[in-house]
Length: 320
Image (cartoon, rainbow, N blue to C red; front, side):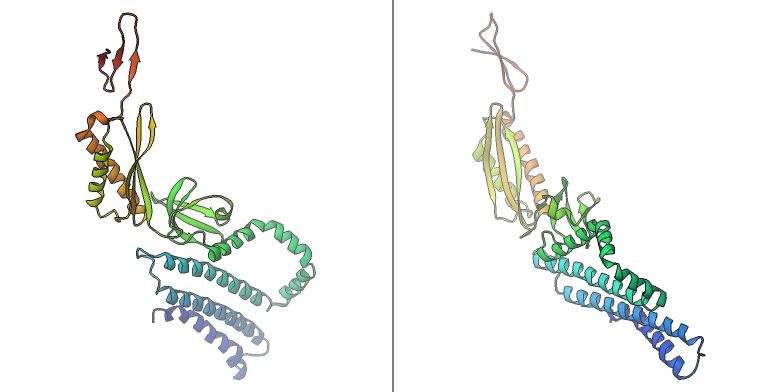
């Protein structure tokens, strides 16, 4: 019943057009002078009603079909695929219907028809002029169709574009709207996704790995940090229990770089998990291994003293 409401107005227009075109003439409600006017109005209303019904039918079919595919569930890759394709194809078909309807209405008028014939006669020159003037628009439309077919992005994909992290909120024939994490909207042309590199974190699946880097002194206990990382991950529902790794990824003269690698069901959860792990690991080092926090060591040589060593906490210590 909810889908039938959108057909009320177009069907009403069709009924009025049938009344104007056929019943007025059949029952002599109009004279010969006024009938062509009513006939023209009836034709316009009929074309408008048919176009409206076709557009409403497309929207109804799309919504009935997409009701089976819920994008709010966790594993929604297939659902987002169909939503993306149907939304773009709907825009294409509705645009074609509107253009054809406008053309049919204009061809009802003799003066416009004569102009149209003249334009067709010079279609070669006009086509070249229009092609140059609208090449960017046409390119954007073609890019929108490519997105529907090849799907480098889908609705609700997590992407990084122009250094901004966000989700694909809307895809049209000519542009894409990205909802940034701080609720701003980034609007980019459809051609962007075929001309410039970007990150798609949910291209094949929603799950993702998160990393946390901790910088410590050489005295740190890596086994103790691994045990603490495991304890932190097991204590939170943010972790999906797939990946739990702690590795030393770099060693420099002032300290070491430790990377904690963990997994989560999606990018938003991974962000929260990374923040939690970073905070808890720092607290663990502060409470249990304060001597393992990063230090800067300076060795100062003098003529009277064998050496003065400055520790990481700013204390002067006599060198041996």
